[in-house]
Length: 173
Image 1 (cartoon, rainbow, N blue to C red):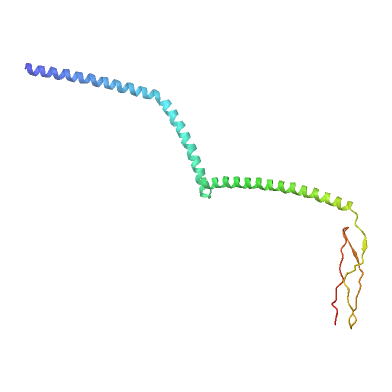
Image 2 (cartoon, rainbow, N blue to C red; image 1 turned 90 degrees about the vertical axis):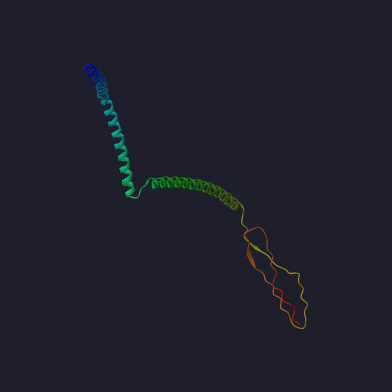
């Protein structure tokens, strides 16, 4: 019996030790549970913030979805921005060209005015009478040749004189 008793004692000691270990484990678990309970308000606050962030993200996605269903996507918005920029650049170019044209028009107007003043300052001559003589001599033959002399009054706008010859007729044999 000694052997049985010692085995029983040994068994009891082992169970007691195992029970103590289990008791220590249980206490550790209880302690961790208590710590988790104390941290739970902070965790809940973090979760609330995360939920709010996700709700905002969902709202943005819903807005994008609504726009996409109407044909407006991020790509369309980007193209619109590009188009607005191109239109703005073209408007600036047109304004620059208009300003250049206005400057050229002002220069042209000033030059035209100077030319008009200079033209008015010169007196236009009245009618000028001229007589045109040709140095052509006609030799009379057996037939009579008629020579016409013509005198015309020609108004001249400048101070130059223009001479014209009368039409020449060839002598007939």
